[in-house]
Amino acid sequence: MKVLVIGGGGREHAIIWALRRSPRVSEVVCAPGNAGIAQLARCMPVDPGDRDAVTRLTLQERPDLVVIGPELPLAAGVVDELAAFGFRVFGPTQAAARLETSKAFAKAFLQRHGIPTAAYARCTSVEEVRKALPSFKTPVVVKADGLAAGKGVVICQSNAEAERTSEEMFSGALLGSAETELVLEEFLEGEEVSFFALCDGRTAVALAAAQDHKRVGEGDTGPNTGGMGAYTSDGLLSAETRDWLLKNVAQRTVDKMAEEGTPFQGILFCGMMMVPQADGSKLPMVLEFNTRFGDPETQAILVRLQTDIVDLFEATIDGTADKLDIRMRPGASACVIAASGGYPGKYVAGQVISGLDSVAESDAVIFHSGTALKDGRVVTAGGRVLAITSSAENAEDARSALQVALSHSYAALRKVSFDGMQYRSDIGWRALRDGL
Ligand code: AMP
Ligand code: GLY
Image (cartoon, rainbow, N blue to C red; front, side, top):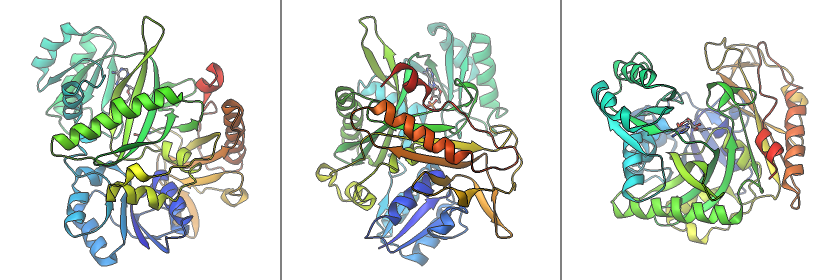
């Protein structure tokens, strides 16, 4: 079959790498792709957020399956449009994607259906923010309602900072475009876990759990990024917690979305905070939903996937998720991001990357996040440049499996270089410190 993948980062490279391992896939086209993806797929220069351009490309290519990677095409209604033309598309409709594209919608949905989440208030003006602030303790979290590429969440230490941040969100000074609504939220403390469930509109099934590292600096310090690394491990969640998340968060969300007339198909990425309770237990609370695969979590998940990825996509489209047999290699995996110097602030693109050929895929897979070809050479073309990923099997001891996976990823990372390259050398630190 011929598959069209929309997107051009490390997540899409990993999806295409997995598609290429399927005996059922004969051709992959990617829009727009990158230098790494170009080795596995025919790349077409189409903007993923441009619905009409994506539709034109799909009509021209007539793929058997379309896989949407990032959130922008979901927000633009690409799935609705392509499905109306009769294409088989992996990803939620525009209405179902509101779980990610509107924080105000997601919070109201969670509250309406009793799914644990932080207390919040919706505000459409600074005046409303001022009125709502006394019912929150500090720190308080200010969130832009719409998509903000990781920049829409600010943890404020004082009410004055929260007011200032809100003002800057409403005026457009902070995010480039003026927000019309934002969410004030109670600050939660605990450990974060990303839980991924495949959903077919009726049934949710657990795919994997991962932990990513959003801050740019070691020890989780400095500004937020798209993610500087991620890992998965059999020890990350107990079977009991995984079942709880599946039933009380993912399946409940799927049930209620269907009841409300906007069935959810695709992958539900539940960003959870495991909040310690007085009795010593932990209550998982939803920080946010994403309605697409995470980046770099996907790279860490897919290197362990044994089931044909086409089966996963088809089950969500055909409503047969309950029959899926998802098999993962036992053990752990680790993905380390090599980023441009200065990221997440200003950085220089176009730096030549060396050493890419010196890493064997049996040691680590180098997924390309932001690369391009220039005069026959691979150069940097984004803040996050490479996602270096490996897995290790050890069914008895998840912690040593993670250690081995990390050592493979870092050994591979040290073989590649480009001017200004930065990375975190402590990916997985929590799991290694606290045990798994
Ligand atoms: P979000 O885009 O909503 O996941 O927020 C990005 C990051 O901000 C999360 O991964 C958390 O680290 C942090 N965050 C968001 N909401 C809260 C909250 N209510 N309490 C504490 N941290 C939060
Ligand atoms: N790594 C977080 C995300 O994909 O949103």
